[in-house]
Length: 114
Image: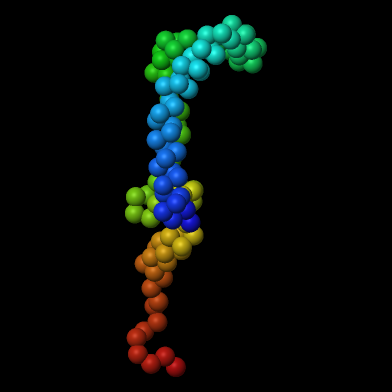
């Protein structure tokens, strides 16, 4: 859905409106943050530890997280045999059929089977 001319026009106009209002919103946000900077920082300190960007950059070099999913390029399966979230069931079925077709070759002799 959402392919009609009316919806396309509305999306286009909303995007233009966002572009037009972006500087105003940014200045308003900066103004609010300046006014409430101390209050906000105190609330954040109660919840979590505040770390400067330099410290984070230094720590980032030391610690590497292994969050990369190893995915097969040919059939798009990951190491657990799961397809990507964005893939719809029809595509999954098609790829599975292609994968299973290569594995299941019958060993019955060609010709008459009695």
